[in-house]
Length: 247
Ligand SMILES: Nc1ncnc2c1ncn2[C@@H]1O[C@H](COP(=O)(O)OP(=O)(O)OP(=O)(O)O)[C@@H](O)[C@H]1O
Ligand SMILES: [Mg+2]
Image (tube, rainbow, N blue to C red; front, side, top):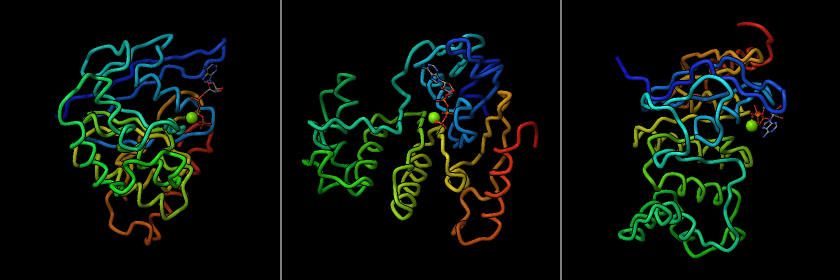
């Protein structure tokens, strides 16, 4: 049996007397990708912040490998919607930053060059973010997320600002990198199709705080977007997000 990697046990969060999460239970296994979907304001980003260690629950516990999460950990990487690329940092500098912050001195240039090459950014190392397209900026942020060899990748709407073609390209890259590293991926998306492309499991956060977990039959299906069943799955999920009570 696989060991639980991350677990949330009876987690509740209140913001100024607004209860955002109530008694949430969730377990995530190592090497698996999970798409977290749900209505706007239901608490998806809050869940990412809890798992990242940016936020502490008011009740319940979040643990990784059985240890309570008290603060951000080095092996967890984040890609948030605001990419956080700094206008005065070149692409190569931005990607190198996580390694520099952790005090690594050797081999940085080579690791950065390797990753930029993999993500098709090799020509852009000396450019600044404002000299890049939206898709290129997303790829730079992805490279910066991946360079520290994380075992857990958290992403909040990673492709939301992109056109359809660039989005599909980036989704392919994310899936490839997650598989290769056998990292756990927990990502939030508004795009149900993205959830069905990238998530081995789909987690639906309901308004009563429950999470409904479904195995995704279209995960890793080649040319999924060319199959009618894929769209039927998306329609089913959209219906489940809308439903107040149960499935
Ligand atoms: N720091 C905060 N202080 C007060 N309220 C907050 C804070 N962060 C989030 N909230 C509230 O908690 C609720 C859940 O927010 P959260 O960002 O987790 O939702 P979400 O599911 O990610 O929504 P969206 O899909 O729109 O991004 C919202 O009603 C939000 O206004
Ligand atoms: Mg959010």
